[in-house]
Structures are given as C-alpha cells and as structure tokens.
Image (cartoon, rainbow over all chains, first blue to last red):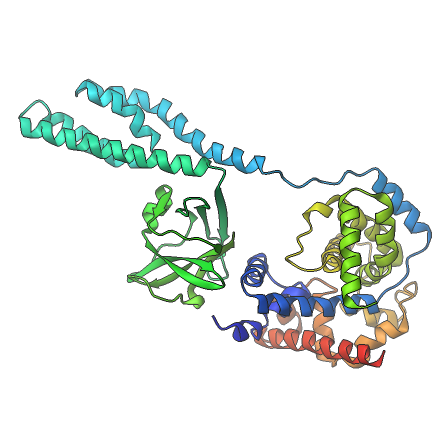
Length: 288
Length: 187
C-alpha cells in the first residue's frame, strides 16, 4: 500500500473540509486506524481547520452563556452502549434458527411419512443449521425412496446420516461461536468501488477462528474471486478466497486463523487469489 | 502554554465533562464558544440565527460527549463538526422557508456588500483568508466548508471538471497550512 500515494490523492483534504462521502469518511478513518502516517496527516490537516476556526472567532453576546447553561441543566447525557447489546444481537442471530426448527416440523412430517423413523429425529437437527438443510433434505428424500430396497441402499442412508450429523455439529459450533463473548463482530461497509456492499466478519479472540457472512456483495465477474484479508501490524494477511454464494447463504467458516487483527478487508482478485492485495479493487473494509 | 499542556488540559476537561460536571461545561463554553460562534455565524449569515445554532450545538455536544472518539481527531475538531453540521442544516432550512434572501455562496461578498452588517467578524480573521489564500482556493473553502457543497456540486456550479475541484481542494488545505504556519512563526 503506497501511503504517500494515498496521502497525495486528496481524499484526506476532502475529509477534513467536509466533502467526503460517508464511505470515504469510513475509509479514511479505517486507514488512519491502520497506518499511523495517515493518522498523523489527518491530524495535521484537522489542526489547520481548527486554526482557521480560531482565527474567525467571534464572541457571542454574554447573555447567551447563561441560556446555554440553563438548557444543559435539563438535558441528560447519552450513555455509551454497554457490551450487553452486543450479546443480545448475537442471541438474536440464534433465535431465527430455532424458529425455523418449529416451522420445519410440518414439512418433515411429510418426508417422514415416506421413510424410516430416523428421519423424524434428524428433522429437528437439520433445521437447526438453516440453509445447509435444503441440500441435505433433498438428498434424504431421494434416499428414503430407495430405503425400501437393498442393503447397499441402507448403507447409503447411514452415510447421509453421519453427513447431516456433522453438518449439525458444524452449525452448532458456528452458533456457539456467534454467541460467545469473545467473538467480535466486524462490520465491513462498501468502499467507493461498491458503496452498497456490506459484509460481516466474526472473529473469536480466544480460538482465533474467523467466520464470514456476506450481507450484500456484487456478483463476481468471470475469472475473478473475492479474497479476504486480515490487517495485522499494518500489513495485509491472506485469509484466502471464498465462495460468494456459500458466504451469502449462511455464515461461512474461514479455514484460516488470525491472531492480532486490526481490521478486515475484501478485494476482488483473479481466480485463485493473489499473494498481495490489489488495493484498487478494495470492495469492503472495516476496523476491529 | 505548550502543546503538551493543552493536551493535558483537554484530557482533564473531557474527564470532568464525561462525569457530568456542569461547571466543566462552563469552562468548555468559555474556551470554545467564540470559535464555534464565528464558524456558525458565517455559515448562517446571521448572528441571531447563529446564537440559536450555537445553543443547539452545545446541547448536542453535552448530550453526546460519551460518543466522542479520540481516534478520529481532537475534541475541538469533533465540536467543530457538530457546530458546522448544525449550521449547514439550519441554513438549508432557512433557505427552504424563504427566510434568507438569496445569498452569495461567498459570505465574505455578502458582508462586503453590506447584506449582513450585524456580523462583527474580526477584520483580522477575514483578512487572513481573503488576502493570504489565492481566490480560487479560498472559494473551495467557502463552498465546501462554509456552504456544505460536495465536490461534484462545486464542479457543476462553477462549470469545471471534478478533477480540477479535487486539485484545488487539496491545494487549498495545503495553503491553509502555509498561512497558519507563517502566522505562528510571526507570533
């Protein structure tokens, strides 16, 4: 990342003068958080605006102070959010899954009618892991039809069982991590390249595991892939490419771990990814 | 008072403010009201409206003190942003309600033409910007900082390419730096 280039691009001047868009503001604040040189430049320019304001100072009428102090006396300070709300929102993420489980039962009774008792028991587990269920449900519907036949088909059924069982285990692990107190949610809003994009990273500071959920991200052009990066000590660390559909349908486990992430970002790279990020193709970025 | 003293004072004041201490707010008012009032009055082109906006701004500052994030900048910058945003919102509302005559974007011109004789802006203050900054750069500051225009809106208004606006904005802020560094040197 060429810091000098970023500084001479004019985006910081735009930021301190107040003409930066919300995405640009977010970007500058993020960059300042990661790179001390950028933070310093922002500060220096802000100081210039402060000086300008000081030079333009006009004393207000003396009576105004009393008016202001009186009004203040009747106004409560807004207290900062406690960590409680964060926990609640993670609990909220769990609830829809449980609700889906209740809705699932009528559908599963339909499938159960044609198959073995095992499917009834599985139904509850499957719906607990949201979208993974659809694929598994189809698999099992197919399998139940064959269940009346030979032993090899029974073996196939047993295999599907253990697959959905481990799928349930994975989903459980994901839910547990989402609800954990040591999991941080990192919101990554879109840059100027994709202003409407929004992706979330869930990073557990104990296990160092990373989960990804795409809320809104443009489709990938042919031959390209999205790649996740963690910013550690001011340097981008490769967190691998990921499948857009998988990460959009449900919370995706990233098969990389990271220790001291300061921020996360996604760039659009050629298929297979790149050892270093192409910062012109930065689509989302967010601070820890 | 050197920079470190200022910083320590600011930290101490902040702590008292976050603690809800009203007399700390009195100190804050004494220290910053004039600077904020200057900016605000210039934006709304009226000291009467300016007083109203200043009061609103101070209420917002008191209310949201716990949301001040020192990673994004100093406390003064934070207050300036609140004051500036309040002023721009107020000015736009006044325009919509037809309560202001059509004003020049450049409020210095208004003052020169006597549209707003109530603004007792210190002549030194105005002269700094008017004399020391090249006209085309000063206009950027007027349009963007004091009138809330986006760079695209400036480009459209002045019929120039967006790239030119961007370059002038950058140069304007860099020039401010030279202006104030020189002034500090003089002191």
